[in-house]
Structures are given as C-alpha cells and as structure tokens.
Image 1 (tube, rainbow, N blue to C red):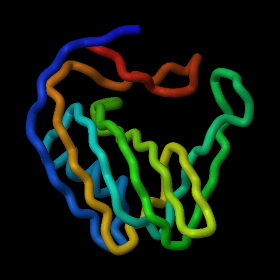
Image 2 (image 1 turned 135 degrees about the horizontal axis):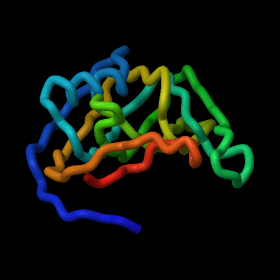
Image 3 (image 1 turned 90 degrees about the horizontal axis):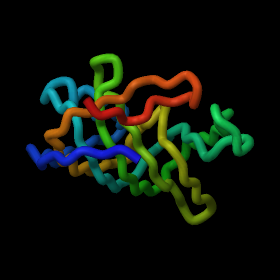
Length: 144
C-alpha cells in the first residue's frame, strides 16, 4: 500500500447531453480546466458503451472480457481522473441496466449519452499520476 494526503480543490457539476461522448466530454473538460487529479460520481442514461466486465482468468496481466450494448440503459458510476503521459486518463466503473439486463464493469469505449448524464467532479490537490506498468498490464496511480 502507498498513499498521500491531499486537499479538495474545485467542484464541477457537468451535464453530458443526448448523443455526446461521455468519456470524450470528461477528458475534454479535464484538459480545458487543467484538472490533474480528481474523482467523480455520475448518474443518468447511456445509449451505448463498451465495458470490461472482468478478466478471462485470474492472472496478471489479465485478458479482458468485453461487453457492449447499444440500447438505452440507466447508468450509475464512480471514477477518477489522473494524468497519464501528461494527458487526463478517465477511469470509470459503473453499472448499466434496463428491465432486461444489468451489466457492471469498467466503462471504456463508445460511451454515448442517452438523454442526459450528470457528473459531479471533485478536484484533488495531490501529486499523483498514472504510470504504465507492463508487468501487470495497467497504469496504477503513482505518487510523486
């Protein structure tokens, strides 16, 4: 385990509108507002997305299992923002569902908002970034 103390910075309340790319809009906001570290919660609905729902096997580095949808589903999620190679990297886990299906995982691609997604971002003043670790197959948060 490793950790650092930080402090809370700015607060952003964000509305992602129908048809917009959720991850693209959050990344663009992080660039525009120079958000280096933060966390967020979100709720709303999505028209499509691709999620990683787990590894094929319990091995490191993992081989991801992908699940996608392109129908309207409710969404609730929590995530963080840290820089990776100098650019914002959004890490978002959430659950999406309707009356027939429920899927939970890491929401990564093709993230189209349906109607609206509301996001509350809390900026963190802390010296941290994501550094790619080829041995484990991902980029854990690393403190400077």
